[in-house]
Length: 253
Image 1 (cartoon, rainbow, N blue to C red):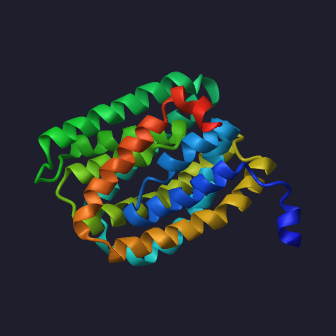
Image 2 (cartoon, rainbow, N blue to C red; image 1 turned 60 degrees about the horizontal axis):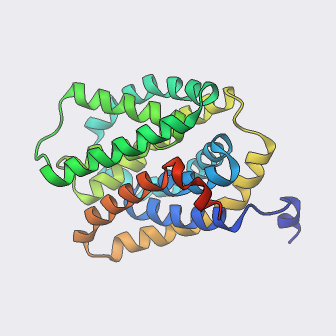
């Protein structure tokens, strides 16, 4: 109780519930936590605080996931993706601190819905993408990660569209964002995103987030493998729609 008292008042219950659900999605799919957490936390706390909190709790917990997922990662694609990510990330962080994020959220969310619709219409591509497409995906992921912490959505679409099996999608997502999160946090720190309030709320949210990751990982091991892609697509669609600024007032209750 003394520890909780030292943390001050808790964030809104909706933020804590969002952290729990985000952890469940991350543990099951290997991605998607920001897709769940950012719309809710951003609506209550503002986008800058939300992205700071998300980066802290995810960086801490993803190391626990790496132990069981790294061997399934598609390392040949992770390298070029990471190069593109590093190129796009500083631009996204700079935009976060200089422009109104609302138009960007509209464009990002609607673009994701469009790409997802095309994927469902065309189906999987049974061959690995070329280097230009891989690098471009990395740049887009870095840009959107810095601006809205939704870059994982871009990468998940990339892997789900290709020949990766379920464990490959999950393992690649986890493996990619271990080094990516370190760089991202450094840039966010330079941009002044990390305040005492961000760390305080991160301390509140990391427990439900960690519990959610454990539940999601258990579900991945026990659930029917045929459910993985439908669930992943549903997560992406729901996240894109809930990221629309139109829903901010509803999310605040």
